[in-house]
Image (cartoon, rainbow over all chains, first blue to last red; front, side, top):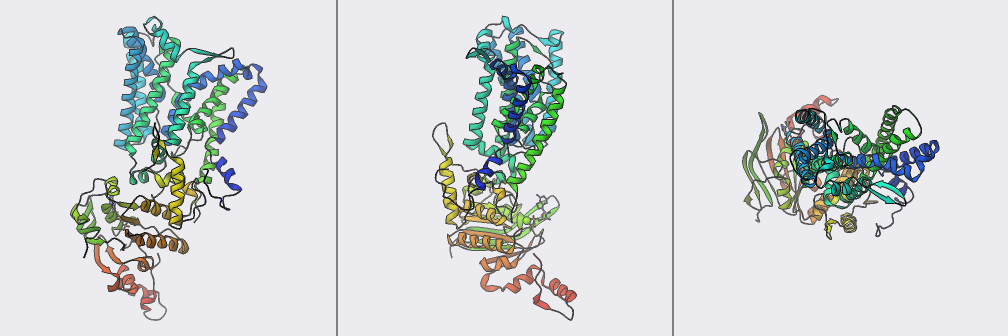
Length: 344
Length: 267
Ligand SMILES: Nc1ncnc2c1ncn2[C@@H]1O[C@H](COP(=O)(O)OP(=O)(O)O)[C@@H](O)[C@H]1O
Ligand SMILES: [Mg+2]
C-alpha cells in the first residue's frame, strides 16, 4: 500500500468504497446493534461474566462457521459438517471407553476418520461435479443414520459416556475443554481455539497462495483452472479443513461433557452457513471473510444467551435468526452489485 | 524460413456426433498476428482450445516450435509459453486487479511461505503502466473495470509471465468501438514485443488492421489461410459472410438493384 501513486480518480470515494466492500461490514454493524440491545435489557449481559458466558456458544459455533466460510468462499457447501461433530465425538468416546484406547489415541483415530469423510465429500464433489449441496446432504443422512444406528447397537441407548474414567482425559480436557482465568473471570479454552482458528484462516485467506486459490475457485472455477490453479485439490482440501474443524468441535464437546448424544450436531449445519452469510459470505461463492463468520457466530452467541438473560422465551431465537439472515443476505447483495458493477 | 511458433496440420475435433473442426491448418509466427475469423459456431473456440491445451485434437498434428505435441492441459501450455485469454472467463470479477494478475503464479516470500503482497501490487501496477494501461487502483475488484480494461489486464498478465504465444478468444466482440480500439492497440503492442498472437474475432474490421495472416473458418472447415498481401479487406469480409450470400442480402436490402460491397455485416 505504501507505494501507491496518487491518482485523482481514486481520491475521496476510495476509502469509502474500500470500507463498503469489506465483507465483514454488515456483521460488525449487526454485532454492535445486538450487543447494545441486550446490554440495555440486562446488566449481567454486559458484565465480564456475561461476556464469558455468551462467548462460549460463539466459540464452538465460530470454529465451524470459519471453516464453512472458507468452503463457501471456495464455492461449496457442506451439510454434513454438523452431524460430523457428533460422529467424531461418538468415535472418540466409543474407542476410549469400549476399545481400550487412551483419550489421545482415540482423538487421533477420530481425526483420521474426519479427514477421510472430508476427503470423500471433496472427491465426490470434484469428480461427479454434482452440487455439493446434494452430495453432502447424502453424507449428512448417512452419518446421521450411522451415529444413531451404531450407538444403539453398541449401547442399547442413544448416548455413549464415561470418558472421564479413561486415561489421558484430564490432560486432553485441560487443553480442549478447560477454562482460563483472565482478570478473575473464567473463559472456556474453546474461545482461544476459536480465536486461533479465525486468525489462521484469515492469514491463509489473505496472505497465502492457497487463499488466493480459494477465492478464485469460488469466484470463477473455469477461469482459475485456465491459469493453472489446482481447483480440485483446493476444493478437496477445503472439505478436509471443514472436517478437521468438526473433529475439533466434536472433541471439545465430548471432553466437556464426558459423554456424547447420538443426535448431536444435527441441524447445526444451517447455523454455520447462516453465521458465514451474516459474516459476508456470498451463497454463490468467491467472496467472504473468516473474521466476518466469527462475528456472525458472536451475534448468535449473544442472541442465544441474551434472550435467556433478558428473561424471554427461547422460541424468539429462531425468529431472530431468520431476521438476521434476511437482512444479511440483502446487504450482501448490495455489496456484490457495488463491487461487480461493470462499466463499459 | 524460420520454424513457426505454433502450427496445426489438418487438425480435427469432434464432440460425440458433432464435428466441431475438420482438417484445419494454420501457423503462428513470433512477432506476427494470426487472425482466426468465422461466424458463431464456426469452430474458432474449439481450434484455440486445442492450441491452449484444453482439448486434444482427434486428428491431425499440432506442432510447437516445429515439434509435434499433445498438451495435457492449460498448465502444460502455459509452461511452454502459450497463454490464453478466454472470451468471458478471463478474470475473476470479485477479486482485485493484483490478485487476478498473479493468479496461479503468485509471488511468495519468507517462511512459512506467504504472498509477497507489496511486490505483487508493485509489479502489477508497473506492468500495466508499461503496456500503457492506466488502472486507477490495483486493489479494486476487476468487476469494476470496463470490458476493454479487463482484456488489457489479461494481456498484460500473459506478457509479464513470459508468454511467447498469446491466444485471444474474441476479446473485442463485447466491446464498443472505442474500447475495441484500446484492445487492438494492446494486441499490436504485444506483437511488437515479439509475441506470436492468435486473435479470434468475427469482425473483419477488427482483424484486418492488426492481422498478418488470416484463417477463415466456416462450419468447422477452413476456407483458407491468407497472408495480408494476398487478400483485401473487402475480400476478407465477403469470404467471411460467404460472398454469394452477402450479395444476395445486399440485393434484398437494397432499394434499387444490387448494392454490392457497400454492405458490412453487423458484428
Ligand atoms: N464441449 C463441447 N461439447 C459439444 N459440442 C461442442 C463443444 N464445444 C463446441 N461444440 C460445438 O462445436 C461447434 C463449434 O463451436 P465453437 O468452437 O465454440 O465455435 P465458435 O467459437 O466459432 O463460435 C459448435 O457447433 C458447438 O456447438
Ligand atoms: Mg467462441
